[in-house]
Image (cartoon, rainbow, N blue to C red; front, side):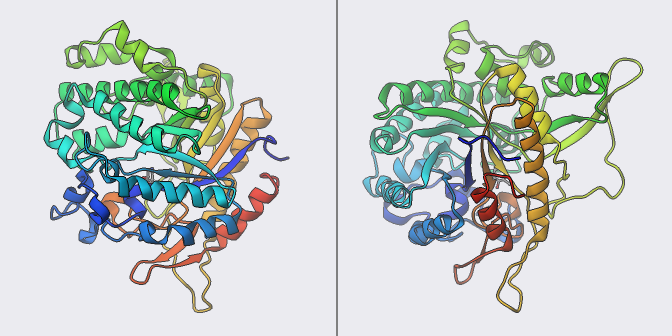
Length: 450
Ligand code: IFM
């Protein structure tokens, strides 16, 4: 059994995690450039200053992608590399970098999938209020216009925002990520509403200005509940939980999904948030729910639920000793069956897994190879489930492995390795791991040989 014939196989990265060159050629600072300077915020004081030096080594990296046989590459653009102050003055040299990257990809027949924002928010705009500022959606749309004007003759696949639960939840609510704020619920919900408006405005700008017909999505994230058994009642319990707001964190996926795909905030969320929810209009919701072409989702983790005797949805404890990645994330491959199934039922769009993968403690062995059987096993198990979803009628449209390269894993610094390709940071040397060779075969067989 293989995947649909038009399925897209790719790998993903993001600008701050791989590019380095934090102030090269006129780039402005981002909140991550500043946050990594704060003692105790990132493991071992790591920064993205050098990262994979992809800014200088992009051609080598594209050649590696071509060797693996990637059909598509998902990357993000650094907003402050292009607009050093976030708005206004355009940095030609910064745009030039993405120009060259896109050309290199196309020369190797790899389709570029561009993400406009993957967390490296311009520092100057943060100082003006960041996502709390009512103009923040406009700022993002201005940036979108600059990028789309420049790249849309060659780029057709666009994503607006990557993982708002992280840059709003971890960045503004818990303070674990840049900019490191710990705001109250009213401020956090205000920022969340602005990011959704920013998404909507950005989609409008892409549609209005793109020079080739665009295919637009975005890349939210969040854990997916899986039914403890395949009984009708447990499945219904999982479906119910998948679209419920159960607490005031930013980690209830429906908070992001329903406004974008249905044009409404979830009722249970509105009840829970109460007065903390900013005033918003029907026009806001119409703007947020611009039609999208596909349903993107970064999916890693899940948890089991069952229907309890009193009718409630019960979340089950992890079985003792259940498998974990190096980052202590649950290995729950069934999320790639149930997630796509539930989303496809509710939102009706083709599903693209915009990220999935696992961290490991991979090193170069004495023979020069980097064996990573855990990553192969992890990915095969997840892909089997996605393939099962496709066989059950879900429109499975694409899969992007996170990540192409080992890279800067945010507050974890460089201690987590997510790449198909090992990076020796002091020298920059790239070594494809055994998973890269395995993934090449997966792509060649369109997912038949997992
Ligand atoms: O590295 C991150 C990425 O930036 C966003 N999604 C999850 C990955 C692994 O934590």
